Length: 257
Image (cartoon, rainbow, N blue to C red; front, side, top):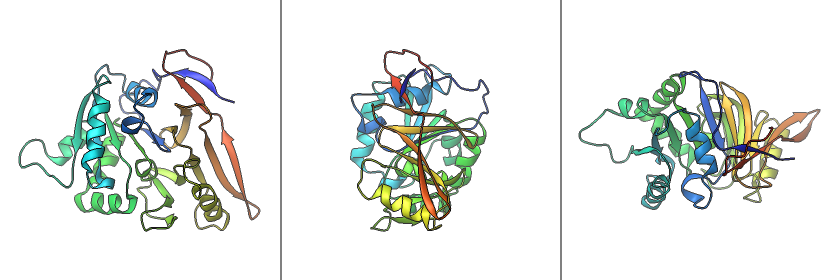
């Protein structure tokens, strides 16, 4: 059963708390009529006008994706920017400076395998870990959800299959679009059941998992019916458990979760 919580999220009042918000799909640039997830994430910084950078590596910095990000940010209190690995600037702050100078880093969707390979070539994987350790809120949808985990379900290679070499900031496996794509749920369950993937988390579109450190702090959603799940193997069978998921209220009504 869903409860309602304010979009003004409360978190540990520590500048260097490690936080990741893993979104199953939606939010930000693809959810124009509901900014509740975005406001929740921005609220974790405890800043009125946080610095927010969009990383579109997984989509090859697709112009339409970047355009939707820019449009979405006009409606939110923040200082937006973009971090591109395809259009490196000739001048200005270094790549390290641009990553480590953010309050929020939002990673867009696309090809997760390509994202990981390009990040590793440029050392972005190490910079992301450093930013996380220093208190930058890391978040993202789809590829931007699963990249933080040890392993995941991906369509980076065509048909859905396992991806084993995630960043490993978060333990276990992950699956986005759990209710949004017909093959996601059965594929993830099969891979966990046969031991190809370790136990992990799945998230519907417009649902997210807020991690503090490497543990779940809260599961949230911006639409009724969107949920987060724990998927595990037990005695040779897969067990799916729906986790308590709080519905974000855009009017700021606070409830229990």
